Length: 404
Image (cartoon, rainbow, N blue to C red; front, side, top):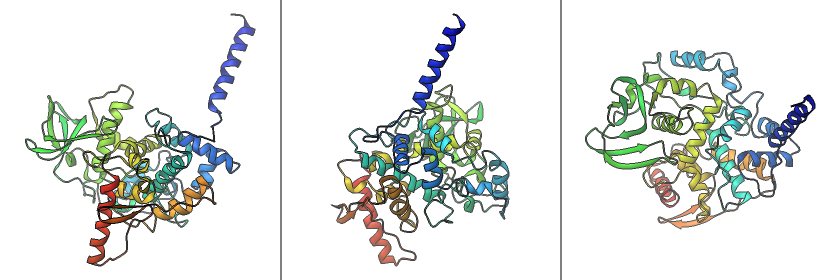
């Protein structure tokens, strides 16, 4: 090959690569979160990364903002987390690049691009997702606007003096995993339980997309022993982490899914759980993958929908907004009018769909209740009567939106 031919080939390769990297989204019918962000950014006269950093969030002071601040904690657990985790990817954990790489791994193709959904419905799913992760990680400094994704772990839950002190998320003894008999540090990635060995219990299969569940006898695979989930890592590690604050069974679920679908040598039958958690809280790409896994593939019960499946259900429009998303993620409406509702209505819907967009009111009669797409009842210090009233509404809403 002569020098001129080589130069021409290299130029062609660079041009094709540039074209792929800078491919223009079809903004009449954008498909996927990255195209939606690109189109919303173009409408605002911006690049997608600047739009993420300056309109949706605040990269200067808020994105991973806690880890950019000097340490100011008061407990041993807070100091351990800050010293061991905040020094890595400081200020970059929730970067646009980490989100972009998480979305590009090929396993979340239906996120904001479910077949049959409209452009409006895709933007609403993205707004639901952003409002959820913003509320989970907020600093509240900017009044529930661009102040999401501030904390990479649940700082307020770290009240112990040492990592041997239990957090409020310490798993109950009924949660079980399978540890390799020859090396108890290696945990089976394909099964875990909520139940007692030799008895029937909820069995989880996290390798599946979405996760599968069954009510069967708790029996370890050959070569494994049943271990209590709370024994496989120090008690102080049970703390919400990442954009959706995974912990307890949700972190174990993502751990299993990752090693069977993403890891370089997948499927990996057994892996070190502590090593995975240590990496999760310092690797923002992995953290965003965990949030997307939760949205797309995690189920809270046998025969239930994932949050993604619920908010994109074309046959049930009342389920497509933040009230449903909140109940699917939280199981209730804690602080809904304080955080998730303003994030959705005042921040992400206007930013993504335009300030002139008006959210429609959708109602549905179900379970003896009139469900509304934006109603998720919550009140500080409710009476017992109000608690019962609120719970009846929540049960009816989830009973309508959650089952397959």
